[in-house]
Length: 57
Image (cartoon, rainbow, N blue to C red; front, side, top):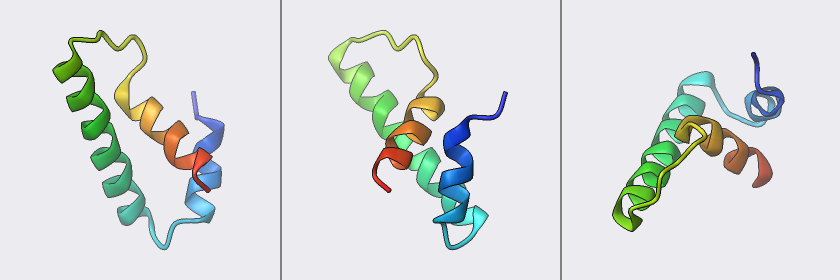
């Protein structure tokens, strides 16, 4: 299923490669912080990263 926020991100990104790098970087930060805190993430870090980046637009 396509996340509706992806369309919003693609329109505001200079190119698709930059978007992939930004999402991956944000997902790794989210995953790392959760691991340090000992939290269990139910939702996938990439989905959380997409939502986070879309909310910043």
